[in-house]
Image 1 (cartoon, helix red, strand yellow):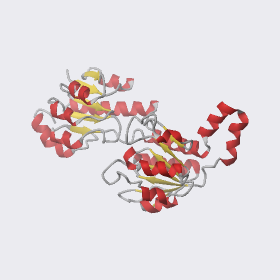
Image 2 (cartoon, one colour):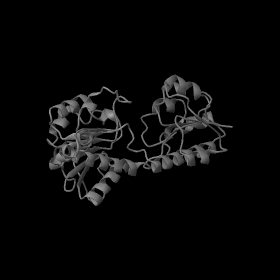
Image 3 (cartoon, one colour):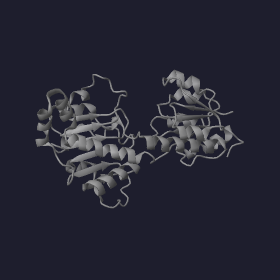
Image 4 (cartoon, rainbow, N blue to C red):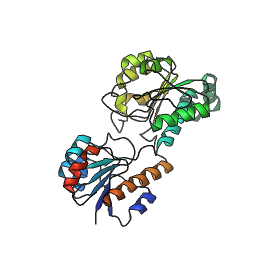
Length: 326
């Protein structure tokens, strides 16, 4: 029976879909050595944690790495291709969850939720209520979206139609914009936006995209919300701007180092909302991601290509490895 190794437990509906198709095994730990060892005899790996390159070098049976989500940065693509392993993902299925998180954190920052909650609990009713005098409404602001994929489009739709925001965006393709979205260059977007939302993938082009120079261009009360990947932002420059009160605040769900160390500077700011890479995780999105990943697993086990194959250049190599497949 094929072995399906998953780095994390799956939603019950996904587990049910895989019943009988193979032996589903949950990794006992997420360190490189354990994953490499436990994947050695695996046919499929379902990915929610970074995979070490050594995993692909030693897993002689491995047919596919299926990402439980959209981002492919957890999979060393070049190593997977060299090993003749198919890579697939399940794009867009958590876009609504991430978009709702963006609006939740924007509101939390504008309404100073962390300060209100802290002082209400520690100092009493009037101390918490005092912050309301400087709270800010969301309506009428300009929200700038960096990256207009599924998440960026979901953010734009909710912002424009649900909160009456002006929506601008920047994206590599600059294709015709969705309704109520205007395109700007990255520098113009940074200068004009009251809320900047990072929804772009991590690539060589986006690494360090929100640099010291671009942070300096932001409005004095602007908010930066990052639901993409940590290295898109220059952490030192952002921390410096927060300390000097040159921007309004930040909501950060992703970091260059994860887990974020408990003594990290970001924890010291009242105007920073920290979440542990959970923007896309809800009951509904976990079901959609799990079922989507399970569907791709079943296709590969049936000798077919995944629907969302992300390295089609590897197919010939894959066919040589598994001549009875496809």
